[in-house]
Image (cartoon, rainbow, N blue to C red; front, top):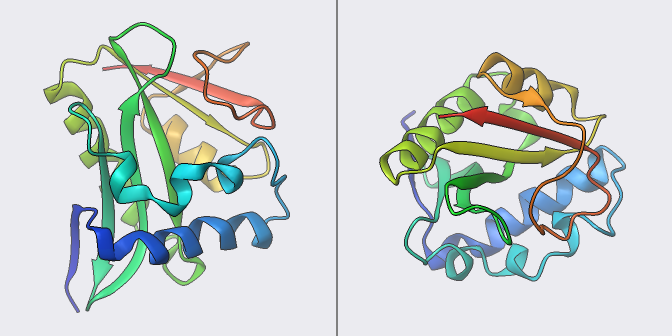
Length: 160
């Protein structure tokens, strides 16, 4: 069993969309004002093609297990990126894939000249918040940029 982390390809779009949306249903998260309703959730490959953006998928034996990416933080300082859409199939959580993926994303952010990395999440995603804290993210009192995620009320940032 070989696990690889690679950049998203067009054929991955439906698999990542399914994983993202299934997490919202599983955790009974709000659908409105979240990634669930983002147009880019159905077009992940196309949404991450601009320079300074990347979306990685984790694949094992041809099966997409999850993903996460880095994008410029919309309507904010050019030196701040956003860690976005980091979701995993429930069968692979707790196996260290999140750590591998966050390291790959943060390395990309550093290599592309970002000085800070921002993220938004929801309070009931406790394992994700634990992972972010373990990787040096700290809480903010308010949101940054214009993500359109009005239902996300946990905001975190990390110096790169």
